[in-house]
Amino acid sequence: MKAPRACVLAAGKGTRMGGDRPKVLFEAGGKPLIEWCLKALSAADVRDVVAVVGFRKDEVVSALPTGVRWVEQSPQLGTGHAVMCARVAFQGNDAPVLVTCGDMPLLSTGSFRKIAELRERENAACALLTVRIPPDSRFGRIVRDGAGNVLRIVEYKDATEEERAIDQGNTGVMCFRADDLWDALDLVKNENAQGEYYLTDVIGILIASGKKVVAHVCENPDEALGVNTPEDLAQVEKSLREKNG
Image 1 (cartoon, one colour):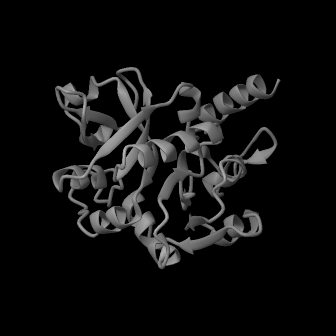
Image 2: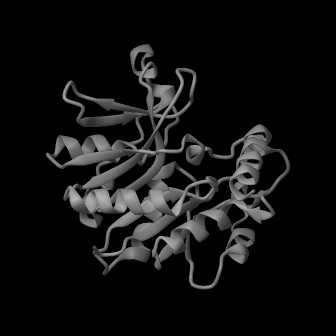
């Protein structure tokens, strides 16, 4: 299997965290959030990593280890736009592209490997990492057909009541066949409640064009914890203490 490259989304401010610092530089377990993510990617043999930076970019760039490249997203127009910004850094290489978030420090090496291996094994355009969620979760929902095939991802803010009742959520971690990703991104529009370009819209575009999308349910729901509030950070700290003894 050809080792994937990784695009790490790290442009956000973290408004709800308080203070005035990039979200990925808040610390959990004594390390910046993004450091946990990069460590797990490295252990999964992902060697080519590009971080998409934005808010106070110089601080984030300074925190990146040697060998991790970066591109700037300015202005910040959503996750799809962030990956569009990274496209130039990946030109000339057809290896799969693994997209993940820099504010999810509990993601494991095993989960990164599993979705890369699943995409390869199923010869799919994309493999998603999903998680079981309660009805009040703000995660985007994985919409499937009657046979269980993935149809699309709908963001919580754009979901109907019926869609919000779906118990499988999108973690934001995806592994793509490179050409399929770039072709689909060209078709993404920003006609949604946020006026942003959602990476999740790529899934519906791929499926509409006859491409295969598969999903792996994360075995440990804690891995899907992203840090958006001080309460989230406290929960991540607790999970890291339990994990690391």
